[in-house]
Image 1: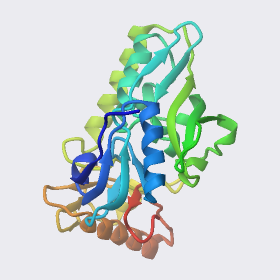
Image 2: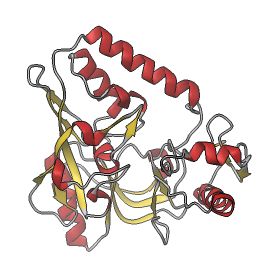
Image 3: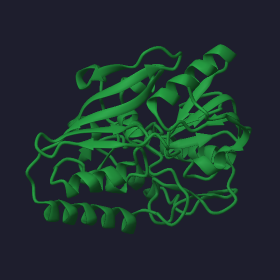
Image 4: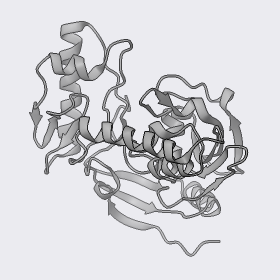
Length: 297
């Protein structure tokens, strides 16, 4: 059992990196796999929809908030590292940047690219997060998941996850990621790995607007083209709707200048999509997951 109690009418703006979003009808932050399972069962018994969030990056929550239970996994943390084999098991709420640093310290090659990603292990698995030429799918061996309807946890292997560019089957299936197992390359010099990790972080912080609330990259790159360059070439840097602005530092970022609403951001995303469509006949697809909106695209 659990002594954890759900909280009602909690502002979700505090749970997203954009700092926008209305209240959750109910919110709970489980600290263990057992507690997570208990709350899934609780939502099912109550006939409530259950939504899962992690670090709240890559996430836009409607200003009216979310009905039902919001399950925030940011406290579901823990890592096991085997320096000899390179096997790493991390719980879903473990921040990817801290995991990147820990495996580098252990001399394990594979996650140096992830140091600047403001997300969790679970989110990285769902989105096939990537940066600096690396991505989750290259190193992930399996995930432990559970149905949003409850039941027993089970494991899916990498070849069952249908990984693609910023995609996995976990984006469609009603499954919650509990943990992820990585198979990294052991036996590397920790000092060199830490140097590469610092270099990657420095590149991201100097080329992206890390001092303002954002969700990271808003749009998937329409390979081989880059979304940021397409947007910049249209002169859209600095374009504002309400408190939302296309970043003047990197055009594939939309920042909250201080008083943005989710509606402002949503409208600015649509404006950018329309301009790129009109000029280049290209559809930009958001990386961002919308919660509480009539469409999730």
